[in-house]
Figure (cartoon, rainbow, N blue to C red):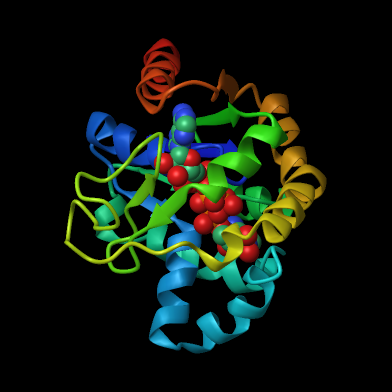
Length: 211
Ligand code: AP5
């Protein structure tokens, strides 16, 4: 199954993806994590992407489409995948459709004002990319990743002014992707406000109803 997770920055796509991957038994492809790995490794892609990400802009379609489709073609994804952060433009959605069949697009809805406060509390692991929140989803030991023991960091693009830019980019460039999947009868929207456990439960219900 190919499940696309849509939603504003900080809506909880990465958190829900990690939960649903065990249900669907398919890997998660997070384009944000792919790009952050590329930056950490100092690759050509990472150097090109960083200038856009630091400003809260989308990286150009030609930088992200090829690498994502390549990941989807790997043996790991033979049973499907959960896509977190892709597609983010209608052109990306069209490129994905030309490559394989998307089964469902699940959009997590959270008002902008809640996003800004969520992002201020997010902490991420630079090594394994696990995500936490200082209040809503804290690690067992403050400031340390539960999975690999690495010191947690605040993402550069979680600064409030960058979050506001990312939200405006989301509304102008990514929201049309919802309409794209709605026209195909594949869009399901869910409320992303509430505790992490509540939204995981809602996501699972939406998925089960769809299946
Ligand atoms: P990316 O890393 O994909 O960022 P994003 O979409 O902006 O989403 P986030 O990862 O910030 O949030 P999320 O929805 O996964 O929320 P999370 O689960 O972490 O992309 C970064 C950048 O890369 C982009 O700006 C762009 O430049 C570039 N990029 C990536 N893909 C691209 C593409 N396809 N095309 C072009 N450019 C691309 O949750 C957020 C916080 O809230 C966490 O702290 C979490 O613990 C907490 N939380 C989660 N759920 C809940 C809940 N229910 N209640 C309370 N708190 C919650």
